[in-house]
Image (cartoon, rainbow, N blue to C red):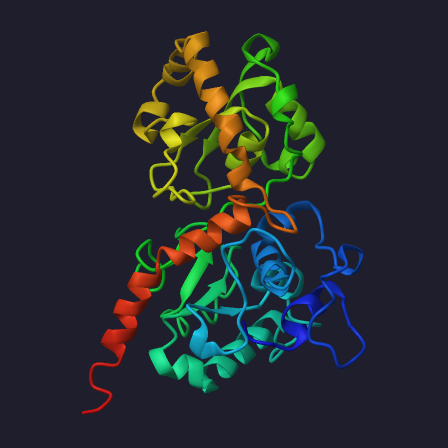
Length: 342
């Protein structure tokens, strides 16, 4: 991981250190800068991954360990909090022509920094990992850094040449509602609502959305301005069987998780038929629902972001997904170097 200036990461959270420090002391959890809540939190993936790498010296089960020599690294992590940069600093200061937002300035500086590095030039950046989870983050830089591996929410606003499932990783949103305790999760008969949809207003009120989901047997996840949304992960944390109506959705860790065991998929062409959706859901028997509900409770841990990370939580699953891309990285690196000695 590069030791980027704090202005690219924890400085965006208001952390200043003592003026000479690059990183906060993560050995003491009370000293770790907190991430802003609300809808900002759903795209906080770079924050959790960075914390995990900074705590490599702490005894814990983990998949990723930070090394100090880049020649020993499988991948090189770029600790730029791009989603936070977009959410907080995408508007230019003041009015008038020529004004440039801090978000644009930071992106330009990241591009300049990476292109100047020996590590980037060595393999064309294919072994670099950049988190751009908010769909509008890294808008300026994404094309210039397209050889890197991106960690994204989906591919909805990316051209295939810039981001695709072959080289990039899809990460879950950080859910807004509280995770239900598996032992206190309402079962079939305790959920009075057949199906629940968490609209835009309720997305900002995690407590109300949580109550609606925990009272419902099924929760709708419908494609909107992007193929994915946080509704899916709020539903999972509420043990509400997700009903996914999004033909182009890419799901996190789907190469190792079978979502059909705990989610229901309905083609968009079927969902628009009058009465189809409600009739279909009413036709699902209690024993079928309970089987999926039990599996859902087992899989919830894979979508939990936390510090310190735990085996097979969201942080660990992302690192595992990155590790599964290593053979692709080696292939691209070798092809990049074909004519180096010519």
